[in-house]
Length: 324
Image (cartoon, rainbow, N blue to C red):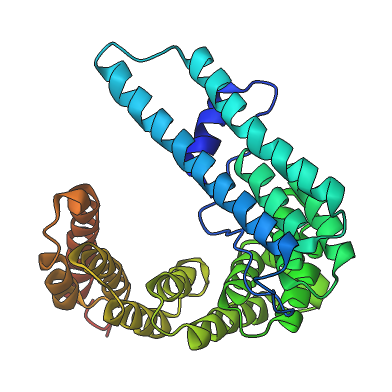
C-alpha cells in the first residue's frame, strides 16, 4: 500500500477521498495457480507496465516527502500545485492500464494489477470492479478472490469477505497471507462470524487463532504473523494468559532487532501483570531502554506498581476474629 500517496490524496482530493485502510489488511496478490510464461508478449507488456506503476508511485512518494521538507524551510510548492503534478504523473499510468485492458479484456492479472493501482490511489469501488472482472475472467486465480475479500472486509458485506477468503485458500492453500487476512477478519467481525458459521464466540476465537497458526506454519520465521497472533489475545475474554505469554515468547524468538525485542518485552510485562507476577514484569520492563518506548513503558510501569500495591494491601488485610 502506498500510504504516503493515499494519505496525501485523502487530504487534498475532495472529490475522491479514500477511506483510511487498516494496517492489518494487505492487498498482496499472493500466488496464482497458473504459471506465467515470461516470454509471453502480453506478460512482457504487463510486467513493463507494472514496473512503470511502481516507479510512478515511488516518484510521487518522493515528491511528497521532499515538498514537506521544503515547506518546513518555507520554499515548498502549494498543495494544489503538487496535487495537480501527482494527478498528471499517475494519469499516464492509468491510461496505460486502460489501453492494455482494451487490447486484453480477459487478462486476469492485468485486471488485478489495475485494481491494485486504483486501490492505492483511493478509488476502492473502481478497484473492486476490476477485481470482479479478474475473478470472472479467471475464477481459479486466488489473488482476485483475496483482493475482493479485502474490499468486502472494509466495505461490506463482511460475509462476502469470509466466502472470498475461503475460496482464495482453497485455490492456493500454501499462501500464508490469505490465512492471515482471514484470521484477522474473523477476529474483528466475530459477531458476524458467529452468526454466519453458527459458532459461539470462543469457537470463533479458536478458528481465528488456528488460521494465524497455519500462516505461521507456512512462513515460520515471520515476526509480523507471530505478533499478529499474540496481539489477538488482548481481545479474547476471559483472558488466556498462558497462551498469550507463549505466543509473545515465540514472537520474541523471531525478532530481528532491539526495537522489535523491546516492543515484545512491553507486551510480556503486560501479561505478567495480568498474571500478578510483579518481579517478572519488572524484569521485562528493565530491558526496555529505547526512547521511542519511554511513554508506553512509563504507563505500563505505573500500572504495575498500582496493581502490585493493591494486591499487597488486599493480602495484608487482617482477617476478622471469629465470633464466639
